[in-house]
Length: 298
Ligand SMILES: NC(=O)c1ccc[n+]([C@@H]2O[C@H](COP(=O)([O-])OP(=O)(O)OC[C@H]3O[C@@H](n4cnc5c(N)ncnc54)[C@H](OP(=O)(O)O)[C@@H]3O)[C@@H](O)[C@H]2O)c1
Image 1 (spheres, protein in one colour):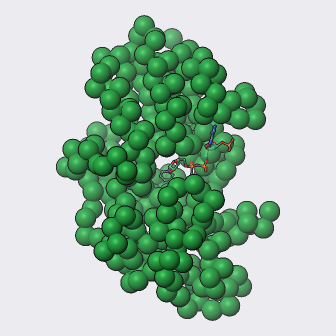
Image 2 (tube, helix red, strand yellow):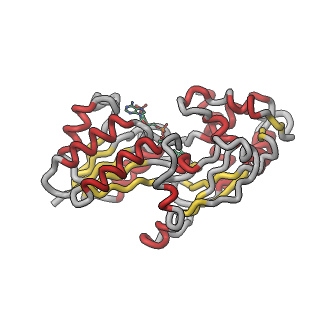
Image 3 (cartoon, rainbow, N blue to C red):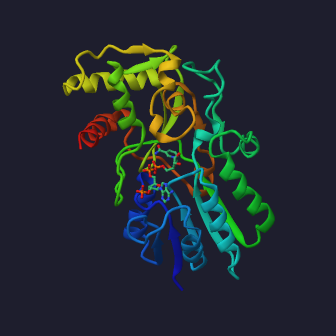
């Protein structure tokens, strides 16, 4: 019997890449996708979401890791099924970022979070951690209905490299960084040693500080004539707080350019034999910045 998958966020950078992989590599699945412009529906179309999810035994939910109404609708529909179902939800390591701690802004935080040894702490982070609102809903459903609902919250760190889906194929960081380089130069805050974990769309997990990203970006942008000088600029925390307002996350500029979010994927190698193989962030940065520049020009 075919497994029926219902996937949301089919036009997104991550969800589109997952959809393309499912279509090209997993022929045994019957796939239904929520798309705003084709099957008219958005995350507030609870009836449409519920109807599609109730016919699937696997739901892959991408696109907005913080939308409470859609996750509640998906869980309620899956729980109406007579047989057990699976829910794969896209969260992210924004949940462990230290952007609210002024002593860590622009400085290296030695804490690296493990998805094995720190799992208790991750599962009981304060309610105001990013994505925690939705993670809590899923955890409560698993605790109450673990015999019928098998949920997995996938938490990637920042992602680099091109996606290969139907819609967006660029991740958020490089285009937004490039956009904010309107301050005149690749930039950092305080010492710039704040460090975040990164994964390639195809898999590779690494770490990079803001200072090192800004230095590498400076060389590439100067080489392509996109900036005059590759020297870096130190910007203030207040300046970073005015950046990327359009993304509707609290203090997203501070989170992306001044905070630490360091994580280690220990569960995937242990349970799935995960082994990173993709190119490093330094190898793809030129292509990512140029793609960000091209999409800005469009
Ligand atoms: N990119 C990263 O580096 C990264 C890393 C870790 C975690 N995450 C998390 O993963 C999530 C998705 O990231 P992404 O970069 O893949 O997103 P993205 O490319 O910006 O795409 C957002 C997706 O959500 C859909 N969407 C947004 N609001 C919607 C609504 N109200 N109803 C229906 N669809 C809606 C969009 O549909 P339309 O095309 O119709 O607008 C699009 O498919 C985010 O919450 C992010 O925090 C991202």
